[in-house]
Length: 102
Image (tube, rainbow, N blue to C red; front, side, top):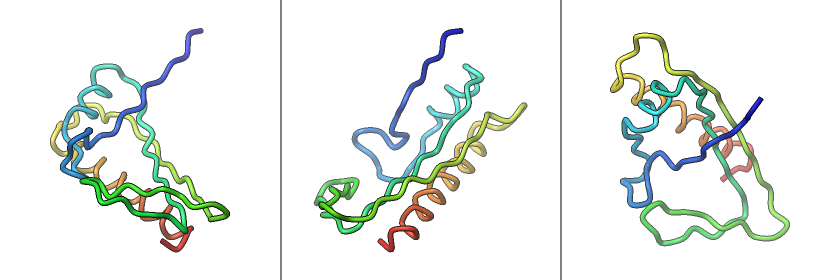
């Protein structure tokens, strides 16, 4: 049995930040592979002045990783699935931030 995986940033390297395009749902639909939404948070951290406001954790802080899993729904509309998955990704990020108090 061969096992593999692919990790992508659904808002891409240039953004816009927190905008999930239809590429991820399309890949899931075509491959039948499950999608794992991952939310990361840390505190204390330095927030970068970049388009995505990335953070760098500082030593001795608190970190959290929260996840959710989905599969492309049979007969699902691509735009509706993208909107639903964007909301789910935002939710796991918010839950991770709640754990760290960020």
